[in-house]
Image (cartoon, rainbow, N blue to C red; front, side, top):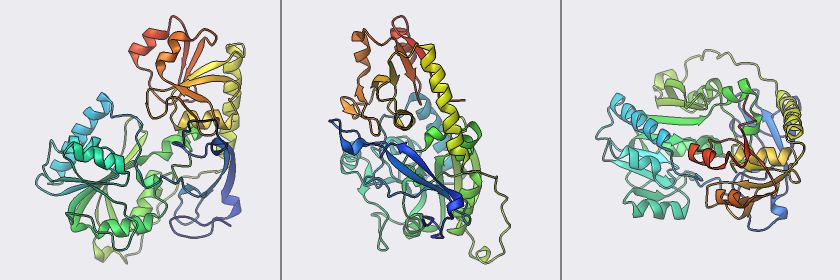
Length: 382
C-alpha cells in the first residue's frame, strides 16, 4: 500500500491507478538507444486527507535541480516584468531581501534586479550556479533538505518558487527549512501547473514523473494552510496553465482555530485512463488522414515524450525536432526516438508531415517549412 507524500497517510487502492508505458523521466535524454529509456508504469493516487493527486514512484534522480530547456520567451519576459514589479510594489519589497528558490541560470533574477537591488537565489545544479555567478548574480548552490539548512545572507523578507514545488518529494521538510531562512513577516509567490485546467480539458498528457504533485487551487490552499501559510491572493495566469498564489506568514492565533471545510471538486481518478484511451482514437484518425505514413514531431517537451511513449509511436515517428541543444542528437525517454535540430527538415525527402506537440511553432519556421511539409499543430489540445 502506498503512502501520500505530504501527509503520510495510506492511499486506498480504490483511489489509485497504474498508468502504463510512461517515460522514465522528462530529461533523461541519452546519446544511445538505451534500456534506461524503456517505458515504466506510474503508480498514481489521490489522498483522501490532503486531496492531492500524485505520482507515488521513486522521484527522478535530478529532482533537486531546476531544469529549463530554453530561455524565457519575449512574451514571458514581458509578463514577468509586470508581475514582479507589481509583486514588489504591492508588498513593499523595494529595499527588502528577496530569494528565488530553484533559480536555474538566473533568468528571473535578472528581471527582478530591475525592480530591487537585494536579490538572491539558490540552485542545486552546479553548472547553473556557475552561469549565474558569471552574470554577477548572488546565487548559492543549495537545496532545502536539511534541518540545519542555513542560506547565506539569510533572513529574507520574501521568496518566489516558480514551477519547482511539484518536483519536491518532501514538501513538509522543504517548507519547514525554508521558513527558518525567512523573516516573520515574509511574503511569498508560488506558482505551479494548474491541474484544474488539465482536468477540464482532459490534458492528461501533462502527467510526467518529474512532476510528483498535481495541484488545484483548492488542494494547494489546504496544504499551504496546514504548513502555516496564509494565502492572500490566488489567480490563474498564462492562459490558465499556471496557478499563482501569494502567501504570508499565518498568524499564530489562527493555528488552532477550527478550519472551515473547503469543498473539493469531485475527481474520478479513472478518468485519466479513460481520456487517454479516447485520445488514442484521435491519433488513429490523424494517421488515417496522412495515410499511415511516417511523420515528424516538433517538440521534445514532456507532453511529446509522454505521447510517444504511451501510444508506442516508435515505428510511426521518423524523428523529433527540437531547438534545445541539450536534446539534439539524443534519444527520447520512453520511446528512444532520435531528436534533431530543426535544420534536419531541409534535407527530409520521405516524411511529409509535421505534428507539433506542446509548444508554439515560431512563425518564421512555419513559413520556412509549410511549402514542403504539411503541419498539424497541437493535436493533443482540446
